[in-house]
Length: 446
Ligand SMILES: Cc1cc2nc3c(=O)[nH]c(=O)nc-3n(C[C@H](O)[C@H](O)[C@H](O)COP(=O)(O)OP(=O)(O)OC[C@H]3O[C@@H](n4cnc5c(N)ncnc54)[C@H](O)[C@@H]3O)c2cc1C
Image (cartoon, rainbow, N blue to C red; front, side):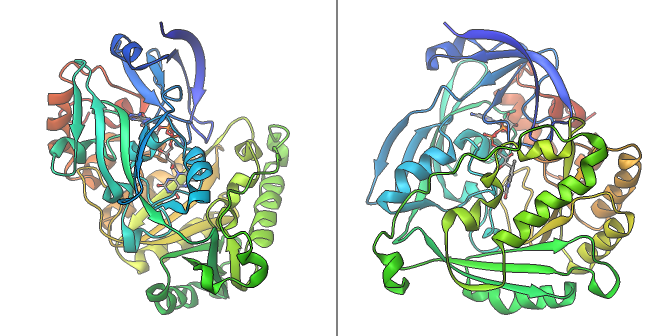
């Protein structure tokens, strides 16, 4: 029998919050019985805003579905239940010489959440988003049907990036990458401005699988875009110095460090800046050599509950992609001039992405945090419209601000996606605050 309790939930940004009932299933048979009007699956709640909350409805906690099911070592194919976390995958598979092809910037996500958001990593421009590395999915529809989907099925492409609105992902079959070591051959370059940054990306991207830049948002004028660009490649055993080669494959256990309190609002800017400043400088000095995977992929996971640094009012993450670097630079200029955002912005190059609701497109994606403050939305809303007018779009799993109009203008295949969703969920049982805000649960998108 499933357990049900009332809770106020939010995403990682602690904004917005919603009261609902959480259903905790004890097994798959419980799931069939727990499809109630309305419900949304939830993994580890690392989406930023209202993606896995459901005011007045039900939220299905997927974490109990946490079993590894099989591994085919010849093909590198892992099959696991959707509630397995990426951290658990790393713990089991890194010591055996396997790593996921795609990883977001935190390992505290579930496989189901990764697929439903079609997450990307620092290698999107070369290896796409996670959907390119999923061999098959098992989807439970609201009518209780269990569908086995592969990339040959349109329901597959509606489910990846479909934000839990096409069904409940029960199982995921994901291709893993063979690795020889837990280390990354790493190069970081400090740059004085955005022109240098883009040139450094161009010069180095052909030689590395991964690239990302951190931009110092306190610099403006001729220093606009000052920051650090980081490149990485999985290190081979033969490349490691003897001291590291003795134990090449390991899962790094984390020291338990926790952000102790909700930061009071009067401390907010200084404290937030200090935390990020510290992370920035300690984790990314100019360097050429080897770093372990944890430091390269998950620097933010070093501190539990770091989202409390933004205080109880919470924050939003503003992540957009635009096709042209000039547009990205103009948006950065406006944000830096306005202030009030995070100390750092994260810049990545993107490539093509398939699916009906893909975030990625060839171009540049920039992500910044903004603590919730009066006047913030008045600044961001017009900026969002300009970004969309320049062919850009916002990332569904992070967005807190789009409305139906901005969403439909930037996701042109929404009507096709909606038709597939309507077939899978004709009664509109699957819904979330995000779905209602963007009109994803109605044909006109309103
Ligand atoms: C510090 C940090 C860094 C991040 N970096 C990146 C990054 O680099 N790249 C990137 O792409 N994302 C990034 N993210 C976002 C994160 O990867 C996604 O939001 C991911 O979906 C969160 O997974 P979750 O298990 O917490 O899912 P939740 O947040 O609980 O849910 C996210 C969505 O998935 C749906 N869902 C969850 N489980 C299922 C299921 N079993 N079946 C159907 N639908 C389901 C939910 O309904 C919801 O719509 C980052 C987030 C944080 C906090």
